[in-house]
Length: 165
Image: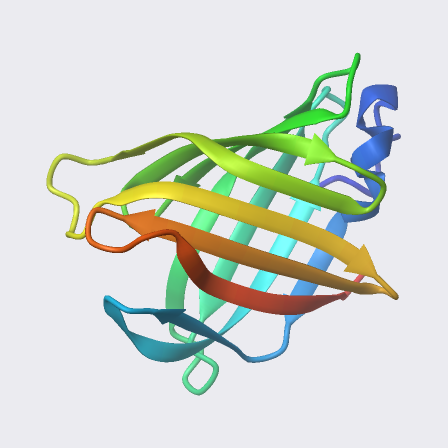
């Protein structure tokens, strides 16, 4: 249940208030040497419930048949004494990551500190994730780079979103 509209934004979350709400992408494409190029659409929701963190859900689907695809959920915390942020991701593909970085105005830059996966996860193993969110002229852009056990760090996703509420 999201409740970003019914709760005041906690003071320590003010540097991230621009992220709150629901965002929807146009059709994007995922690229990576170890997988076939595929189109997708994604909806992001960032919300808070009065606690000193932000919760999020990312849900992607096939743009043609709307079949669910990748899902991510988690929490964002910010160090109230600095511009440091941490995103904790749990993904439906059996991957969890802790990504830390900074917020500077309406830009967040993150790098994974830990990436873990279930013991029977599909190869290749994800080893590093770098992520960037930036809001410019009402458009939220997310870029994701990924490194695996067989591929050096390189772009995996670049997608733009528009606020839907």
